[in-house]
Amino acid sequence: MTPVSAEARSRALRQGPAKGRCVLHWMSRDQRVLDNPSLELAVAKGRELGLPVLSCFCLSPQFLGATIRQYGFMLRGLEEVRSSLEGRGIGFQLLTGSPERELPGLISDVEAALLVTDFDPLRLKLTWKEAVLKAARIPAYEVDAHNIVPCWQASPKREYSAATFRPKLRRLLPSFLSRPNPLPSPSIPWRDGITGDIQAARRALKVDRGVEEVSWARPGERAALTALRDFVARRLPGYAEARNDPLRDGQSGLSPYLHFGQLSPQRAAWEVRSSSAPQEDKEAFLEELIVRRELSDNFCLHAPDYDTPGCFPEWAKASLDQHRFDRREHAYAEAELEAGRTHDPLWNAAQREMVLRGKMHGYLRMYWAKKTLEWCSGPEEAMRIAVRLNDRYELDGRDPNGYTGIAWSIGGVHDRAWPSRPIFGKVRYMSLSGARSKFDVDAYVRRAEAL
Ligand SMILES: Cc1cc2nc3c(=O)[nH]c(=O)nc-3n(C[C@H](O)[C@H](O)[C@H](O)COP(=O)(O)OP(=O)(O)OC[C@H]3O[C@@H](n4cnc5c(N)ncnc54)[C@H](O)[C@@H]3O)c2cc1C
Image 1 (cartoon, helix red, strand yellow):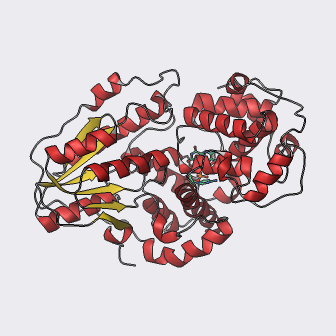
Image 2: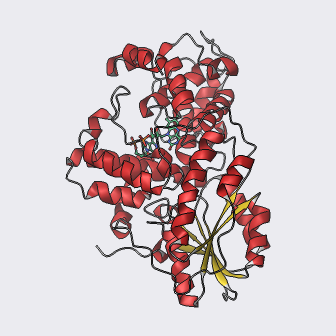
């Protein structure tokens, strides 16, 4: 199939005559140079208008409870972006502060003719974008560089479940899943230098440094491609079976790269689809990478209360309410949960893995979040604690996948009603004995204790 243009993945946020001295690319969610349709569109617009391209990143000094673990990973990735852009005749500028204030200032300073940015369904990002567009009245385009099918084209409404979303995606995928395009060269190179010292910005950050950076994932788009290719060659064969066993290295480990936009999902899907791995493994992986991941963006875009019980389906809200005052056999304060001091060795081990490694296994994430409902005073408290811990410790935290996964676990989002039981009502339950039937829990606990 012929490559899909960046234009096809874009929508105009504001139209009008483009008058000025450059095209400004606001890199936010998708922090890479290659396989990045939003940068590609900025360069294409620059070529059309005969203007150079400046890409900027605005470093917000606080971001939804992120710690040095997440900031460090992101800034190291941005170092690579900066030098890669420099070699391609595209400018780079690091801004520090609130995008609502910084972007309009930059747009005016560099006399930008047009703005191109990426897409993000999270509330804070939508607020930033709205404020920037209100303050700077230039034409602007948004490109969904994070979903294979642009989120607004996949579905115009909140989808009920993967079963309702999957056929819509399947219909559109043939029009969007192509080999990623090479980045064209700008017709006029950027000559005004590169501004913003990433190392200095990193040192000046006043974020929580108590949560250490991780060593198992090297940041940056080159490392992301290496991780993808290593996964495709060595672990994609067998993924369908191995991914659910926390003792096997069965998952791809790509979520931090995908979260920070250091890896293009289109690239990942393309290389997986073109590989010689068994069909069953390819399908299982693409279901997660495309259907589940893109469903999370659909959910967060259409349910702005995605991190509170207000987003639960009505059947779950009613049923959880009925069981609100059920007796809890075990109840823990937030600090006990954070310290991994519960009666449940599997839960403590999963919590320990997340705190120390910055990545809990996917199967355990469901179990972990469901237990917060079982041991907290109600869904409100469970949701708040699960979101806070997830966002604080997971390297891939603050992602639509996280908010959706937590809402699935605690509030039945995208799931169906199950036979009613205490505390959970009709929300699906998971037990320690169920986990024991799936994998060697004791071996997992021993491994976590040795971390
Ligand atoms: C309570 C809970 C919290 C979660 N928190 C996060 C989070 O903070 N950040 C995050 O990226 N994911 C989160 N997930 C989703 C999923 O568990 C992780 O994406 C996955 O474990 C990441 O590891 P991997 O890249 O090795 O996954 P793989 O199994 O290799 O999957 C490949 C990719 O597919 C996507 N994917 C896989 N499973 C899911 C899923 N259930 N929903 C949506 N997309 C999926 C991810 O982008 C993932 O990187 C959460 C799930 C639950 C139930």
